[in-house]
Image (cartoon, rainbow, N blue to C red; front, side, top):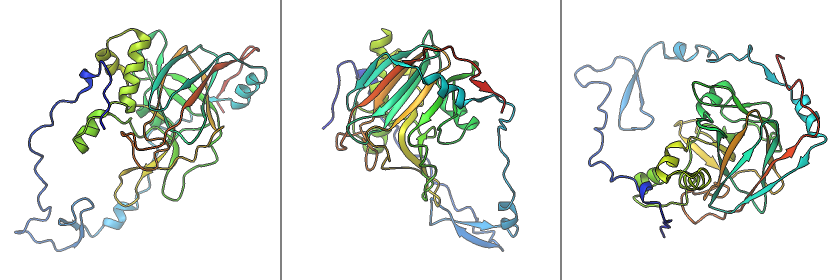
Length: 319
């Protein structure tokens, strides 16, 4: 059953374009038969492509890191954790299943996103609390860290600011690493479930997806129209979500999150932050999202909620 909320009209995707892109033709023309070995195309098994004689040599070229980060200051996690020793919990926010809420985190505070009740994934947006133009940039965070973030990783803002918005200081799922399928936790490779992709793939309409949840929450908190809020919602940090790319076809996959009640992801606010968190309708994302089929649970935000009583110092180093 489609669930529609008041004020969601602007979120209705436009009618899909008529027709579809032309399918690629055979990459080995019939009038020029290949003298080399051939292999099937990964996505089009009816298409064969020529394999050059030096294919193995080309594949064997070693990779290089696109963005060496040796010159970047690295967070001094020991100093961050020392600052936590005398903290005080100042606020706790519970976000219901298939919903979203905004919260503010002052600079210099810690905050935790905590699993309660049962396995649940969350989609997180972060903004400069005083300038919504500056927000979390998942692409550059991925490029400067890794596909899945954890302790010691910075969450960067978009251009032209490109600075740490927050630093991950603790993660009870840091033990997970990369599994046999290539999956990891807390990804910055996916986007967020949204009504447009759902419409494209299924022809249906669903507005309790993370994109719509974040849009409504930001609109209500910032006092801006839904259409403006939607433009400001951006690619997320998929908190607790376990994802990766299939080895054979390179497709984005999800699997049951290993998160359990009591697990948390902890961050330190490097600037004054506005956060917006959606409890994904996919629950633990073991099967589906963008529907009411999955079993979902609330998430808690403990809002730096931890306030250090001691003055912070030496939180960054070049080692």
